[in-house]
Every structure is written in C-alpha cells, then in structure tokens.
Image (cartoon, rainbow, N blue to C red; front, side):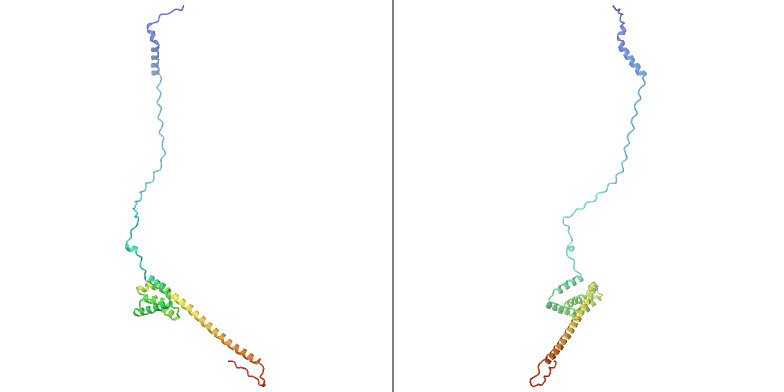
Length: 226
C-alpha cells in the first residue's frame, strides 16, 4: 500500500496563491506594450473657389395692355410730299372732263397765289395728264419754278420737283420723237399717193394707145393725164 504523507494545513491554498503570485510577477517583469501612434489625418483635395453669385435681375411688372398716350395713337399727318403724291394719284384717275375742270380750278387758284409752290406743283401735275404737247411744256416750266423755290415749302418739295422735271423732259422728248415720226409717216404716205396718181395716169395713156381707130379714119387723140 502506498504510504500517505500527512497534508500540511498551509498547502491547501497553494494553487490559488501561486497563480496570483505568478500573475503579479508577470505584470511587473513584462514591458508594457507601447501605444499605437494615431494615423495621420487624410488631406482632402482643395476645391477651386466658387464664382461669385450674380445678382438676379430685377423683375418688372408686365402690363397686359400697355397704355399709350392719345397723341401716339393718332396717325402722323403727311407732309407736303405726301399731300402732293395723294393729289397726283387723284388726278391720274380723273376722266377727261373732270381733268379739264381740275385744270381750270387750279389755274384760277394759281392766279391769286402765283408764288405758292404747292399750287404750282399741283397745276403742273394736272397739266401733264392732259397728253397735250403745249400743256406738257407749260407743266415743265411750272415744275422748274418749284425746283428753284427756296422757301420752306419749296425746299421740302424740291426733291420731288427735280424728279418730275426729269420725267417731264423725258416725256417731252418721247412725244416730240413720236410727233416727228408721225409727220414723216404722213409725208411718206403723201408721196406714195402722188406716185399712185402718176402711175394711174400712165396706165390710162397706155390703154388709150391700144384702142381701135374710129371708122372715119381720124386718129383719136389720147387722153391727157389728169
């Protein structure tokens, strides 16, 4: 049989005490672990500076129906040139009888105000519509007076007057050429008629020579040409 040794009373707690002592010794002898260094902070990339904000444009209230002064709503009155163009358009559509009455009326009005460029131009425009060479020549003279007028109204009408002077001169040249050609045609027609008369007289003489002699033997005298 194995021999049993008597248990000492202080050794019953030895294992727990030994463990405590060993833990204490290990805490004193082992070097303490160095604390980990903190990681360097991450640098964020720099963003470009934002452009300065623009101020919003001021909003203006919009009227549903803009109001305009009464003077702006009325049509602008035509000047001297506008009145003259309206007169020319009215005269152009007149009949021959109405045109003659208009020319007579303007002649009477121009007699009392012979230096008024407006009346002179109206009279010239009316005379140019009659298609008469004498009236056209008179209209050209009146329009040249308006083109040389230095009054306030005359200076306003001068551009139109110069334009109409050039037109009347060209119209007069064309009408003179037409009259000249008409006269030449009349002269040619008159010469043709004279030649036809002479030719007919020669034919009558020729026919008289071919007739038989009378029974008494007296030769018949030919007819004299007429």
